Every structure is written in C-alpha cells, then in structure tokens.
Image (cartoon, rainbow, N blue to C red; front, side, top):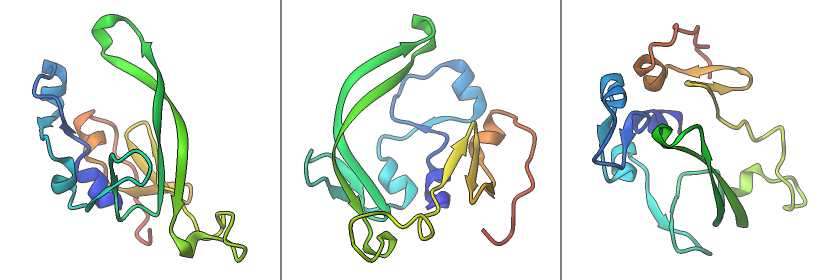
Length: 141
C-alpha cells in the first residue's frame, strides 16, 4: 500500500493552499481514493469511507481538535474515540482475537520518509517536496 499512499502524499483536499505548499509540489485533488488507486468502502460503524485494501481499519469519531502553533499554522492534532477495529484474518493469531506481531509489519512515516521493519521502505514524494536528503532504500521491502 505504500505506493498508493505515496500517490496521494502531495495532494490536498482543499482548493486553497499556501504558497509554500504549492512550491513543494502539492496540488488540489478532491478524490484521493481514485488518485491512490484504492477502493472506497462504507465503514460499518460511522458510514464514512474506509479503504478496502487496508489490512487494519480503525473507525471512530473525532472527540477533540487541538490547534498546534499559532492560527497561521493551520495545524491540528485530532483525538479520536475508536469504536471498531477490523483486522484482516491472516494477521490474527490462532485464537482470532489478537494481532500477530510477527505477521503485521506496519508502515510508519517518520517525518517525510516511509519505514517498514525499521528500515526505509519506499522513495517518498513528500520527502522530495520538502527537499529532505535522500535515504538508502532496501531493495527487498
């Protein structure tokens, strides 16, 4: 799924954007599902769209929005109450109750870079937009 995520890394759902975002290569795209090549599926609890291809889906509701920085930053942290977790069967332990940590290798974004298994996983469009120094990408990830 990292390639799909990278396809939307420099997209924004807001038609208005700052000059700095535009200079980094961001562009307006209202339909990120199509742009990513992912399948839109209605959520079981919230009715909001989820990603069918996602191995783990958390559904919930935003309980609080916390501004970060000053008003010109337009940056917020969101607090969400998780109401349902869906996990692909092949990631579960034999008791079907817990995620098997040996089968699940989550994709993590550290700053602007994708990591899996503790190593860089994929060349990041976001990192190029932010002019980050290049990382060595493992070939077997």
